[in-house]
Amino acid sequence: MVTQSSKIDRHIQDLVLLHVAGVALLTLLINASTTGALVRYLGLARSSYIRQNILMTITKNIDRNIDENIKNLKQQHYFSMVDWVELKKGVQLKKLWKSLK
Image (cartoon, rainbow, N blue to C red):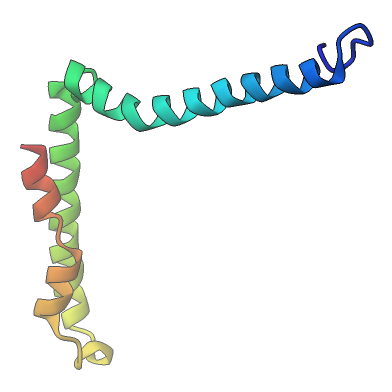
């Protein structure tokens, strides 16, 4: 609106646009960098007890399925060269499960 008005000096138009852009940029930078910390501080990011239980159950089931699938794969002669201990370390969800407790 300011830039389209012929009654406002070009210098003033540029100055208004500079200030508006500056305020918008600072608002984005400040809000983006502090909002996460503020939400955590206020306790608004906590999961509900039900949600945590659901996630724990899901991770336990996935971990159990991984064990069963590895057991089945061990029986295949195509996978005789696999280091099963390393594979299990790479796919287990125990760390995630512990963090949900």
